[in-house]
Amino acid sequence: MTTGVESILSIELPFNEKLAFYSVSFGEGGVEVAVASGFYGDEHNGMYVCHKLVQFLREVAEGKNCGWKLKGRVRVLPALNPLGTLTDRRYWPFDNRDINVSFPGVPSGETTERIAASVLTALRSCRYCIDLHSGARFFNELPQVRLYEAVQAPMEQAAAFDLPIIWRRITTPLLSGSLAHNLNERGVPTFIVHFGSANRINKFFCQWVFVGILKFLRTVGVLEGDGPELEFTPVGLEHLKSGRTVTPDQEYRVLSKESGLFVADSRVGDVLEKDRPIGRIIDPVGGREVSVVASPRAGVLFTLRTNPVVYEGTLLARVAG
Amino acid sequence: MNVREFYRMKTPLQEKLGLFETTFGDGRGKRFALVSGLHGDELDGLYLSYRLAKFLRAWEDSGKPIRGQVSLIPVANPLATAAAERFWPFGQIDVNRCFPGRAGDEGAPFVWAGALFEHLKTFDLAMDVHSSNLFLRECPQVRVVEKFREAVEPYAGQANVDVVWIHDAPTVIETTLSYNLNAAGVPTLVVEMGVGYRIQTQFVDAVFRGVLNLLMNLNILSDALDEPVKKKAIYATERNVRYLNSDSGGFFVPEAQVGSTVRSGDRVGEILNALTGEVKEPVVSKWDGYLFTVRAHPIVYPGSLMARIIET
Image (tube, rainbow over the protein chains, first blue to last red):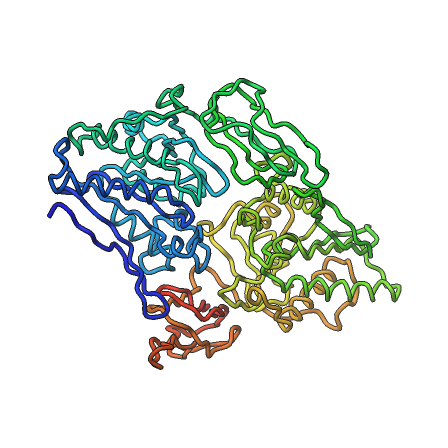
């Protein structure tokens, strides 16, 4: 069978219902690439990309798209916090626990630990994993691949996504409970792709990432062929080169020095000169401008705050310098 | 008695959010601080602070000496307490994972935590009072990190609690207030009791006596209790703590009281099926011991923690 839908876990809800965690696979043999999404119930871009991917892979698997051939198995898990998605909650709704800090999980533990254990079991034998995320709830993110540790393999493959930013981050104790860290530790290079913001579907960024995943699948040999699906122009952001690597010393965080409302005057993808204004902090009560937020460095604005309410110390933006 | 604001943060609407403290004493002696409400849903510490403030006010009014200093910081996360939420409401950040924090740090709760930590690290002894969470009911207990056992254990034994739970290294979180205060040389007792969103007065009464006992032993108060606390706490460690988890989902009705002894085979409660009127699962202790945690929230999923028992 080249296409299969299965449930990797069924959670018994307290009142006679069962909640299924679905996975859909295409192609033959062992899983080569897994695409996971939806750990956070308020992130929807990943689900939309999964939808496009499933649509495309189904056509290819059924021979309806002659330009492409599947040379291995791809597994897609679109919604890994279904109750969170259904109830518009970021974390597992019942106890507000974050599934993506619960890895490696416990098969007989609390619900989030069971989910983590089942996801890890489903993915640990694949060759690569892609974990799709929107920006955390207050941010808009330029499409980017994040690598959380110095694993040997993935730099070349990370470039295959052809996205503007590859951000190498240092693992913190909190991140050690993530799917990516736990798969990396088990020899499955995992690419975390962030794009757009929570509670919204950004079709432009989703298309960019969808095309990026096809390019990745082709680079690692799971997909063979060519077609109009790969045609994509990042209109308005053509000036950005792909695969700009950001190491921890090239990441410049812009923190708010004041409390107030942040009004952005820039967009993600803008190339900024040093001291160029990113936005302003205003005082909505006094009707005055409290301060101008300037770029600490020349570089690409790749993270920008969307929620305007800020306190002293609130993260406003990240610049790749 | 002096009530003062030792830190204030400007809000986005240009109002102020303050950290308030009540102090007692002449400043010539040991300094003790009680902090509670780091989690906005934990309320026993508010009542404990009230009991202590009332007691110490009367003590002062009667002309009796308070040597050194007693500080009460009952509402350490006021925005969360006001919003009836556990975490820092804006962004749902656990303030007790933001320590040591510092001015200029990323994120308001880290800046806030930094101000609290800087203030508390000059004390001789601190008590961080917690009330479990929405899900579990706890008997009064002090939790001690193995790494700081030597400094903290003598005080834990004086706090009039049922249980002293010594945690081993793997379960320790290094970003809590207590970890950072202990690491900075301020012995800090983490007290857990009751359940979130409720006040359990008899548990607070016990810890109130424990605090007075500590204040006597620190020589801050004399003869505050008719007789010193003699209660011997039961020790819990990774070797004797047993966890009872559910197998099925449903709703749980407890039968046993937290803080009681159980025998293997005794019923702690039942998981029921509201649709059929059937018992889905009796929750039964598999050990002889002391029941120090019982689930308070009725809704359970498979794997939910139902009880913790110290096996004897």
